[in-house]
Length: 105
Image (tube, rainbow, N blue to C red; front, side):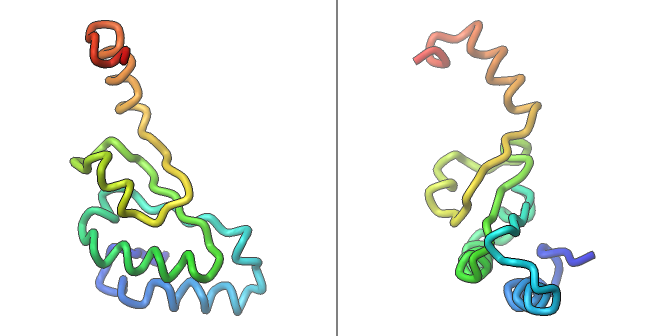
């Protein structure tokens, strides 16, 4: 299994490109999921690698968003196609909405 958060992260896009070439799988049909913690470990490097992969035609999703310490403002910096919000984060928001006026705005 390839781990994009490991020391081999620098060749992440190259690895994806090679896998697509070897398999013949269409890049537009591939959606890579990266966890929030993996992306936030090296935000600047992640943005570069994610952009390179998207240039191949591959979609990128952030999985487990809301489990770490990232701010919603980071979403404007990340080249992602979809966001998968963690259930625990949604439960917290649901509980807050019932008690807090600012969650209703």
